[in-house]
Amino acid sequence: NNFSFASVVREHDPSGRDVELFRRHLYSGGKGPTVKGLKGAELADGLFIKEGDYKLVKTRFSAFFATHLDSVLKTLGMKNLVIVGVQTPNCIRQTVYDAVALDYEKVMVLTDATAAARPDIHLGEYSSFMLALLFYSSRELLV
Image 1 (cartoon, helix red, strand yellow):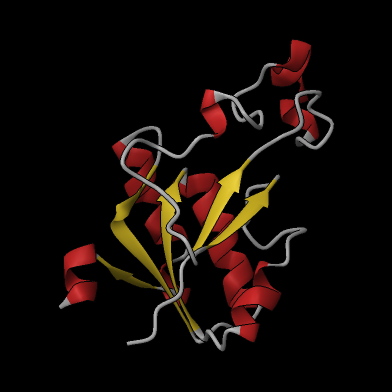
Image 2 (cartoon, helix red, strand yellow):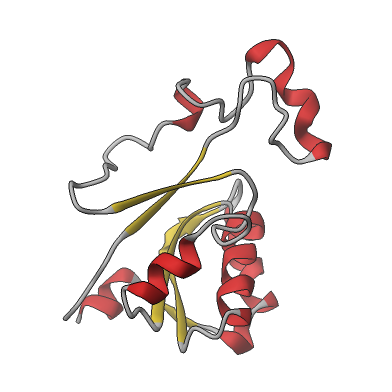
């Protein structure tokens, strides 16, 4: 199997000038939930980016919006994507919709490797994009 990993992280300027307008108020005084170099922009405990993996910084919900992720993946010959991460109703959903719009052949979401603020929100999101996706648990995908 040929797997490539792209780690997408959200980092913002301390001024908040690259944050969505509706969230800019959270970045007053150089502090905000995902300011570059502060704890909120770090990877969660236990996660790391291995040497040779690709790190991409995003400033919006979708990993594709205003980034060069699509170009990188297509240069690598990637046709199928496995999406993992947090904030299913925001980041996961927007990334999935963009991947489908960009004509990736299979877009898979690992249900046990994605999350939201509450389990009911997380699970409820899957019905909103059920027709375009394949859903797996990490165990099913690795079998």
